[in-house]
Amino acid sequence: MGLFSFIKGQFIEVIEWNDTTGSVVYKFPVYDNAIKMGAQLTVRESQAAIFVNEGVIADIFGPGRHTLSTQNMPVLTGLKSWKYGFNSPFKADVYFVSTAIFTDQKWGTTNPVIMRDPEFGMIRLRGFGNYSFRVSDPALFMRGIFGTNENFSAESLNGFFKTLIVSNISDMLAESKIPVADLAASYQELSHQAGQRLNQSFADIGLSLVGFVIENLSLPEEVEKMIDRKSSMNIAGNLDQYMKYQAAEAIREAANNSDNGLAGAGAGMGAAMAMGQMFNGVMNNSNLTPQQAAPSPATPPVMGTIACEHCGHQNPPGAKFCSDCGTPKAEVKFCSQCGTEQAPNSKFCSGCGTKQ
Image (cartoon, rainbow, N blue to C red; front, side, top):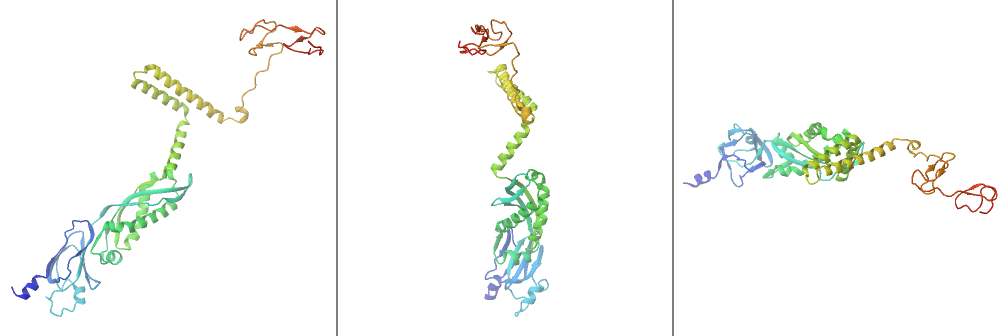
């Protein structure tokens, strides 16, 4: 083998990329090697090949098998002088770009987004989800993003996309003015709106946003607890249903616990009914005016009756014992001066003031 044959054998004759790493961009290794004119270029489906000459994009090839010649490389042919004839080798950087859809890319808020809610006021909101994208314009994507990187993965774009997505989501939520309690019912609509807003930003760098999903928008833990308490109060507002529920739970617990039997069921039902009646009384009194809720005054004693010294019960005149507690009636005393009946243990007459 002569020297010319050895040098000729070093020229690259087959250019292809078997993508097994999930990369977005792959630079074909042509360092210190020349590409032979007439070499075979194989570009698979969901790929594009970019030829770069001295930092300038020369040609872009789509899927298929291509024979590198002056006929199908018009731009590169114009850039090269081909001093040694059209069959001479040439040197160029070759980049393969994957045009497949990159799915299940994650996004999420690093810090809470502060927004105003009509019911809870100022709140902090967190969110996360996923999106999918693909390269739609390889040349624009090269100029705007990956430049001369030899290997470029989807993870390399996550930081850029995360900032872009969170910024647009924050603006969209603030403009929508949807109450926090209704956000879960609007995930699909919000995802669609976010995709439309973000698609132009992706297109500016040669990408296409294929799908965008909001999986969850959540509140801080303390706000969620407050919502839970409010829900519990609303549920307990129907006390009749609450008592029935408690009674059914007590019966179920008694059935599952044979040791307590009916006694446990009765105790549970009694506690539930007592609690329900107590709540019911409080709720009923809360709906009354202060005059309606005030307790009624004690019934005044009937004229002519005598109050028991022990319990205060009003007894008819002439009764010797209290009809309520059985205490004997106290001995009646009269004033020796004027004859007025005196109260027990009185020191002076209520009629004339004579000392007793």
